[in-house]
Length: 308
Image 1 (cartoon, rainbow, N blue to C red):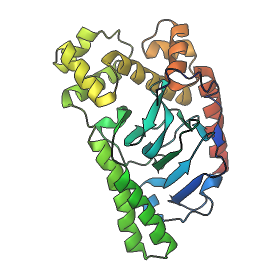
Image 2 (image 1 turned 60 degrees about the vertical axis):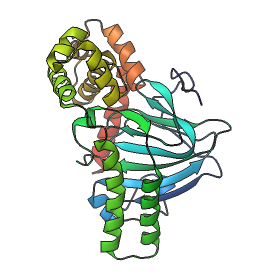
Image 3 (image 1 turned 180 degrees about the vertical axis):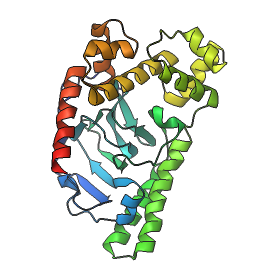
């Protein structure tokens, strides 16, 4: 299944979508009562899952035209394909997530995926609750898709669901919930990058406005340029330059939500003298223009505060 090179197959990535065709089977479990997603209605609620920082988890089997777009991921999202495959929007482009592959998306990014025609898709997922500290570590700034056996995680999720439906006591449910969390933590730990790469990205994040060159990044990491390229791709799936852009756009997204600064100022803070180039890059990486991102997400934050 070929990867898509752009967002052209879904031009409205800034628009929330949730298309679940007839025949879609969702076997989910929620970590707290009152889940806002209608497709979680009827799923058992396991407090132990929520206590571990997980909002919900499940196994889903679907087909075209299944398509999901969440314009701002408030908690980390882990997805692993069991069979078939679909397309996931990652690092500014559509990428195939087939059998035996998994992807971890960190908070604040566009969360979008869909099933292709003629290709049924079965996958398991785990959604981290907003603000939860789980899955934190050096790999937090990395977003990666790679080979991974999803069978143990799917069995843990389904085991938790069945135990909850059978009325198992809290200690039993807690053990099942721990298996779910451990499965995802194992994936994240496998991508803790080389300490020299971590040191580099920490330095870059402190000075995003600097005109970083490949030679300067290699010097900070105490690596040759070629070795840095290899380690960067192994840890992030991106070249050093592409990851620099990713960090700049991640910081820009944070500033768009936390300040009222004009786009020109935010562009300068993250290393772009030309606001047009910044806006074009932001849309490519994040999925929609900075003005649309700020307007939509600030409305969402205000609405959430008013409900509290």
